[in-house]
Length: 241
Image (cartoon, rainbow, N blue to C red; front, top):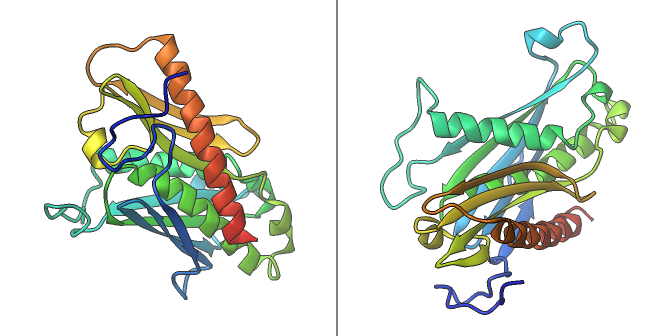
């Protein structure tokens, strides 16, 4: 295993998460919401329940969950333009990733013909916005289920477990956990990992930005991701206790 010592810009060990804070019920109107902070990245996550499903599920008795993601104009050092008429390819990819990740822990056969609508708005971006959005949205989803279970009792059995996500990468030849933008932009390998609290993988997105990487580096990054997501599960549990 690679040494945990490094000269990372913020002084963290290679296997150390950035500061994590999750503030539940950040908004008053959604069924569930939270503000998640991971280092300099801050994402507002909210969930609402509607009595509607996509057309391909009508009459099936099954529900759905979909997600939207956006970076607010002031979330980066240069203004991010609003996607008013057409969602860009990166945004579309992230929205689908968030939706897949949350549906992995949700039994849609137990929510009736209803949809959970998830919104993730990036207030400040410093790397790992999509993974923070997944981790925070799970908390918001649990809160939304709790708020609606009195009206729809079947929701009490809808959750299969928890899901969280983290970024890992290889920077200057060293596997590192939870990359901020400064490391992400020069990483040799960039990877996002989504896991359930049962230890199963929902998604692994890994790309060599320069030279190809071997099995040893892959195993090292997955081990870091396992450690990081386990710590995030604990943070989620504390907030939801």
